[in-house]
Amino acid sequence: MEEEKKEIEENKKQEVVIETPEETKLKQELEETTDRLKRLMAEFDNFKKRNSKERENMYNMILSDIISAFLPVMDNLEKAASATTQDENYKQGIELVVKQFSDVLIANGVEVIQTVGKKFDPELHEAVSSVSDENLGVQEIKEEFRRGYKIKDKVIRHAMVSVAN
Image 1 (cartoon, rainbow, N blue to C red):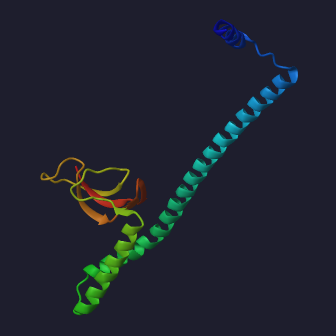
Image 2 (cartoon, rainbow, N blue to C red):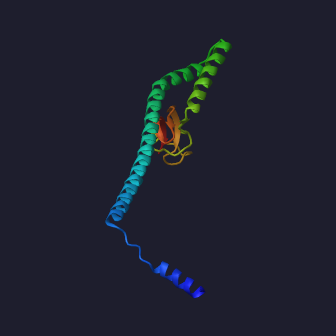
Image 3 (tube, rainbow, N blue to C red):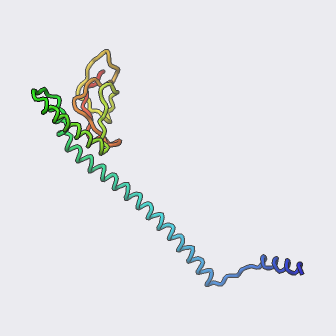
């Protein structure tokens, strides 16, 4: 009896399933539909990533344009804060406005480009003069004439500097 059961089970395992043409066609359509769905999902995912990247680039470009329009205002405020005056309250008020303006720039990801004592980098600095100074290294920045600013790796305004030869 057990031998018969084993024989029947082996026969079941060896049975070849014969598909009808209709089943074969349905299976093929299912595979094609599944493949199209996977491709559409991948395309949509790529679209979302591309759209997000474009939005971020657009935001950074607009932010850079707006901030670059305000930089001359910041320059003038810094000049006003460094000017000598008899009215100490007026000077403190200007310094507070400069500090507040600076904090807003920092909060929006704007960084000041480091200059004095650093090596000249044409990507960040604009050399407007060169000086001979034995105490400074080659291509070392001696003086800053105008501050430069950047957001992440994008320069908003190059720093105007004097470079040692």
